[in-house]
Length: 145
Length: 415
Ligand code: SF4
Ligand code: FES
Image: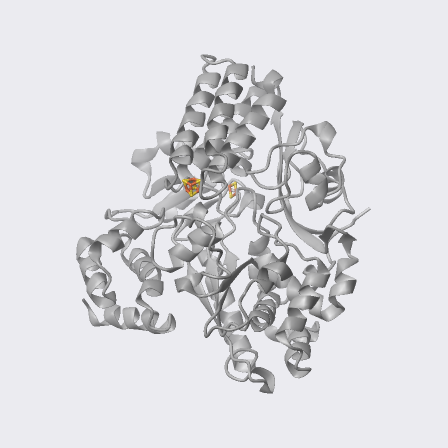
C-alpha cells in the first residue's frame, strides 16, 4: 500500500474515532473515488488495516450502487430515469445514449432519483450535478471528456 | 395569493456563518446553554410544539427523543440526509443554503438527549454538497459552537459527516444504522428501536434534516407559539419539493393546512406547463398513492392527505400528465416507479424481494395487453396480503399499494 493511501486510511479512521466498522464505507468510498473501482488487492489491504474479515467487506461492497469490483476504463455518467425526469424527457436522452454507445467517451448507467428533480432531466458525472440535460448537452459533454 | 417563500426556515438561509448570526442564528443555542435550560425542558418544548418528523413517517419528534434513556454513557444523534424518495429534494436546499440552521438544530437536539457526537448521513448522490457542510461545521467549530464546553457550559459536542454509497433503503433508519456500522443496508427487525439499541448498540435518535432545522425555530419562538402555526395535528411549516409538469418547479415553504394542493400547483408552481394535460398528483413521493385532479382541493398537511387515502410522506409533490393524446404513457411512469421498488428492495424479506418482481411482471403483461387490469389488481392484492406485517420495512407494501391505486384510479387511461 502506498504511503499516501495509508495516510488517508489513517486519517479516515481517526476522523471516525478509530472505529474500524464506521470507517469501512468511507474507506471504500475513498478508494472507489480515487481508482474508479475496488480491486481484490485493495480489499485485502483494507481487511488488514481495519481488521475486518474480507468476506464481510465483499458483502458490504456488493450491496451498494456506487461501489464496484470492476475496473472501468471510462468515467460513468449516471442518468436519472425516475418519474420527474421521465416526465421531462429522460427516455429520449437514454435512447440517444444507447444508440450512440460506440461514439461515447464515457460509460453511462441509469440510476434512481438523485434529488435534482427540479432540474430534470438530471444526471451525475463524477458526483457533480448535470442539470436540465438535453441531447445537445450530452454531445457537448462527450467532446469535453 | 402567495402563501409561501419566507416563513420560518427560508428566513434562515445564509451564505456564511456571519450572515447567519446577523439573522439571529445561534441565539437559540445561546438561550439553551446560556440560560442552563435543562435537557428535559428542551424535550418538553419540542413536545409542546407538535413537531412531527419531516422524513416520511411523521412521528412526533419530542416523543421520539423522550424514549432515550436518561442514564447510560453514550448516546448518538444522527441527521438523516439520505432523502432518496423519488421526487424529493427539499433537504438538499437546507444543506446548501441553511447548513448553519441544521447545525444549530443538531447541537440543541444532541444536548436534549445528551449526545456528545452526532453524524450527518449524507447520501452519496449529494457528495457535491459535502464541502459546503464540512465548511459550515468548521466555521461553527472555530467560533466555539462546537467542541468542548460550548458557550461556557459543560456540554461537549462534535458533528461528523458520513457519506453513504448508494442505496435507497438506507434512508430507513435501521438500515442507515447498519450501513454506518459497515454492513449492507438491511433494515433491522423492531423492536428494539434505535432509542434503546441504535448505533453500535447505543441509544440513538435519527431525525431528518428538515426536522432538525425546525428545532432552533421552536426554541426561538417557544413550543406553544410554534404549535399555533399550521393546524393542530400538523404544526409548523413544511418544505415541499414541487416537480413534474408544472411551470415553476422548486422547493417551497408552506404553512401546513393553510394552502391546498391545487393552490400549490397554481400559485407556487404557476400552473401546468403548456400543452400538457393534468392526470394527477403524487402528494408525498412515489410511495404515496396518487390523487386525481378532482381530489386536490385539500389542504396540504399530514391528516388531510391521509384522509384521501394517500400520505404527505417526504413532502414531494409530483404533478403528472401527458402531452397530445399520449395518455397511456402513464404506464411508463408507473413502470418506472415499480422498477424503482424492485431494484431498491434490499432482499431481506421474501414477500418484498419476490413480490416487487411479480408486480413488475404484471405491469409488463398489462402493457402488452396480456393481462386485464382487473385481473392484475386481484393478483397484486394477494401479493399485498403476503407482505402486510411480514416485512421488516414498508418498501414492498408501498409498491403494492401504489400500483393497485394507480391501476384502480386510472383503469380507463391504461386500458
Ligand atoms: S420489505 Fe423489502 S426493502 Fe424492506 S427490509 Fe424487507 S426486503 Fe428489504
Ligand atoms: S426523478 Fe430524476 S432527479 Fe429526481
